[in-house]
Length: 345
Ligand SMILES: Cc1ncc(COP(=O)(O)O)c(C=O)c1O
Image (cartoon, rainbow, N blue to C red; front, side):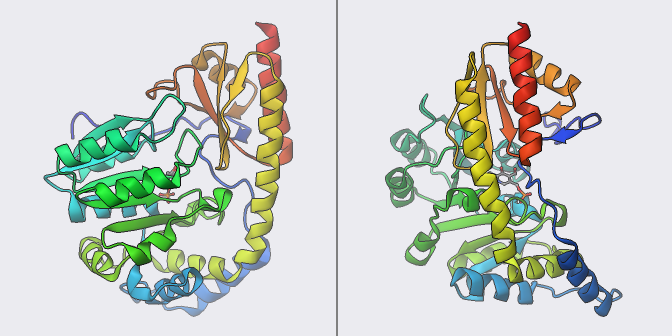
C-alpha cells in the first residue's frame, strides 16, 4: 500500500477540459428536473433499494438479459475491483499494457498480483503471449479494455475469443467506450461461463458525476460478485439518475453522433499537421505523438487554457498525449493551440 499513490489530477487551471474522456455535453434541464422530481418524492430517511433492483431490472431490459445477470456498481472502477476481490485475491490478474491506469492499483488493492503483457507496437492484442502468461501463472482473471484506453483501438474479435477460450480463469472485457465503437462482446456473456462485460454511465451517457457502472455475466458470477459489493453501494441519487438516463437514452444518442463526427474531424486535422501522428480511435479520445517532448506540449497547451493528458510515461507511448473529443469549439481551440505550439518550434 505504501508504494501506491492516490489517483489525483492537477485540474486547477484550465478553460477547456479534454483530459478525462468525459462527455462534453451536460444533460438537458428537463431531464435533470425529472431526476429532481423523483428524488423529492422519495424518502431520504430510508436506505435505497439494497441491490438496486429497479435499476438492474431497467438495465436487464435494455440489454436483453435477465436481471440476475446484472450487477450495478459505484462507477465501473468498483466493478473492476469487485471482480478482482471475488476471483483473484491471492492469485494473479493478467492484462495487456498500456491500458486503463487504474487496473494496476485496483489489482494491488484487491490483493492480487499484476501480470502485465505488452501490446504489440501497433497496439494490437498479442493473444498468444497473454494466454501463455495466464496459463503459466494460473491467472484467476484476465482484464481487457476494448476499445482500450489510452490507445483508443479495439482488439480483434478472434484475439479476444482466443483469450476467453484458453484462459484458466474469468475474462473481463471492459466496454467503457462501447457507444463510440458499437462493437460489443455482450453476446459472449450468454455463451460462456467465465466471461463478464463491464460498462459505465460515465462516458456516452454524460453521467460521470453520478458514478454508476454495471457488470453483465452469467447468474453464478453475478451471485458471487454480489457478495463482495457493499450493500447500498449505489445511493438514491445514483440509482434514480441512472434509471432516468436509460429512459432517455435516445436523446443522449444525438450527442454521441456529434462526438463521432468531431472525432473524425479532429483526427483528419491532426493527420495534416506536420510533426503530429494521431492513432485511429474507436473511442471518444485520440492518442497522438508529436515531434516535441510531451511534457512541453502539455505545458504549452495548459498555458493556453487547454488541459489534455500526458501519457508519455506509459509503456510504448513515449512522446504521446491523449485528447478527449470536446464540443466543436473546444476542439477548434485545441487544434489551433497545438498548431501554434508546433509552428513556434
Ligand atoms: C477503460 C476504462 N474503464 C473504466 C473507467 C472508469 O470509469 P468509471 O469508474 O467512471 O465508470 C475508465 C475511465 O476513464 C476507463 O477508461
